[in-house]
Length: 530
Image (cartoon, rainbow, N blue to C red; front, top):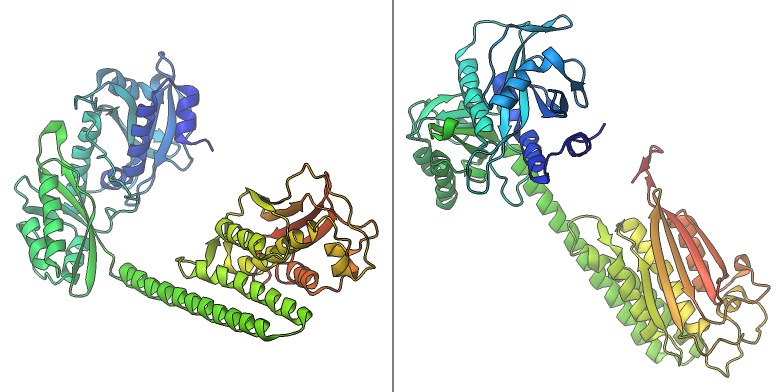
């Protein structure tokens, strides 16, 4: 299904600012739909002959829908949309006419013109029409709640026609907000409560206010109820700002262990401030879970921090032991172990600063690559370069993959670019236990370089480590390798990462290691999990 923007750009000549305003309406009009007990359909004109296209639709949560089928993408003209043409051409809300039938459902039509105010604050031209269609099959004598809902809905409908609803969204504010069913309070121009829904009354009781809200000065009540004077002042100022015709950000009030989220909206039909609408939601349990998650996240980060410290201690002990070992082979083995432990510590260091069990892997690769060039036992200056991005990886993948890359990078740097007079075995030949061969000549015009490339495709991570060094011997067989580094790489790739590895000659000389690692993990019940 095409989006609102796609439909508007394809079928109309609306400006980007007009389409953005329609998006704001579609983001906030659930409120109007619930207050109206009606479906809302957003219609834009297609041609000058009175044809309209439906680009968005919302159904009420407080009443049955008038449409069983989705109307988005429908193009209609003629008598069926005559009411839309009146609202669009005359710029007024259309409420005349008899009920119409959609199948066996009787419905009442209304049409609300949509305006976007100019930069000078004046009402602009009509750019679209909101159809408000009410299912009349369950019509009955309205209750006090329904009368207050409908009265407020009419005020908001007039504000859409004036171009003053919805209000601008504050930076960083999400679309999550109290809904009509959570709790609704209506204020008069003086800030006194004229109506409070039962759910709103219950939310205030959680904060410690047991009396009825009608007649109360809500701004003063918020100051009295809030456990923190600053929170109370901010919540009170939000009410006063709405009464002045402004649209304040959402506020939270904490009192007696309970938390309530409030959203205040000005009511200004025809540009005249007549009061405010306050939506409230009891979010006590939500905040309790948030606090529990924050505590859990802090604990997990502390664990990763301690693991990193312990690994660094182990690396320091191995480094100290290496200095006291007389055998060169043993010293080299201990130094390799130090580098392996340090690469794992990098992952835990990153996780200790993260709020979840995932890491931005590019920075880790860059640090491992830099360390490889610094500690590698070679007289040649080798450049390191990364192409593409690894992105965010789960901790269980990152820990194993960093060890694999550490081994491959060290191998490429130390053995791919030996001194000119060196004729010992090639790196992979050494790993495979084959007879030493003379090192192939390397083009002296090429700058020694190792390139790490990464890209994602269909939930698979493709990684290559390529050097322009002396390359592989003709009879190389990776499966016969007995060197510990290559054994670690094969074990981690095929075991922990459940991937594949291929070592081959590079297209332009040198050596290329190709890794393919699945990013989706398999759960205990056999299902795939990204």
